[in-house]
Amino acid sequence: MTTITDINQGLPPRRTDANSAITLARAPFALTVGQVIKATVVNMITQDEALLDIGGRQIQAKTPRTLQPNQVLSLKVGADSPDIILNVQDEAENNPSVSQLMMNYLPKQTSAQNLLALLSRAAANEAPLSALAQAINSLLNNITSLTSLTQTLHHAIQYSGYFFEALLMETEKNGKNSFLKKDFKSQLLSLLGLLEKTPASSLGDEFAEKSFQSPFDAKTPLPYAKSELPLNMLNSNDLKGLLKHEIEGVLARITASQLHQSEQSLHAPLMLALDIPVQYDNELYLIPLVIKEHPSHSGDSSQFSMEFALELERLGSVQAHVGLNGNSLNIQWYTDNPNTLNHLNQEKEIITGLMRHLGLNCEHWDCHLGLKKENDTPHSNHLLDINI
Image (cartoon, rainbow, N blue to C red; front, side, top):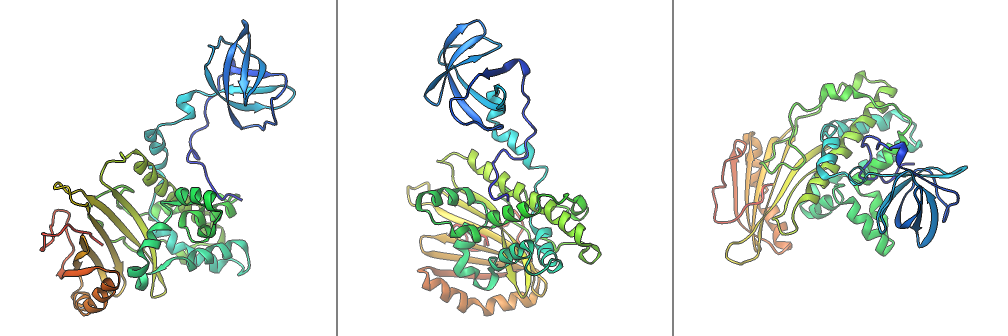
């Protein structure tokens, strides 16, 4: 079962030059086909024979080309009998640049909007005790409730899938892996493993969002439109094939965002764009979230901004803008529904009370009719803004 994928997964197969293969009569240790090992050239013995240091052991090898002493080779095991065949990997191919990886992932990436619409239907189509149904239900049960998001936002971000590898490294240190049942990317990888033999269906491309933000767009997020997938017209095989296709697209989106983050300088201000799945009123929604750091030019601590947007069936489209300056909050709401505007004003005391329990003081709470445009600035602009 697939549980963890390498960041290189999905890249075109690397080319191997038949004239660059190195042959060993015996292996320094157990080797398996496909394994990549490092070797250091000690010296050339003859024109077509070299002495290699592999794992601290010196091994004679036949080579079709001249190698330089102290040259480090990346070798991929091409065969393990009767002779050991090691293909020399081109370093540029063995370590693809971030831009090369981006070219692979960006065309495939999509938001989880269609996937969320598929999950419940796919689970209902399976036998309740089947591995696929149980995996889907486990994922659904771990999606954060919108009503508790104020208290659980930290965990919703932490387990959004964008920090899966970091959590995995932490697991290796402390031996605790309970997060695997909560992390969105981890659960998607598990589902993909269960669908390994299912042909992917590109039917979802016909119903993909016509426009959605890139996985590293710093613009003010807009609400995702409701999925238009014709769920009632899909049979069981269509559902599984489409589910696999959408999972692959969402994993590509998360990976593209992670690659973008890896390119950022450690000293650059934080800018993180991600999607948070939430549950509300027995429905699943996707919240685009943008978090930014605003360094202080006066030497004070950085301030942060965060934006998110959401469209609910009964409330319409909603954007929120929260500015954080020390422990002071500036919250701005934007909606296209007058009833929702009144509802938000009525919720002011409840939400600001929750903020006080967290040690935060809400100095400004403003609600606006109409969605926030990209170039709009908050009315109370003496505080830096976090848009939610």
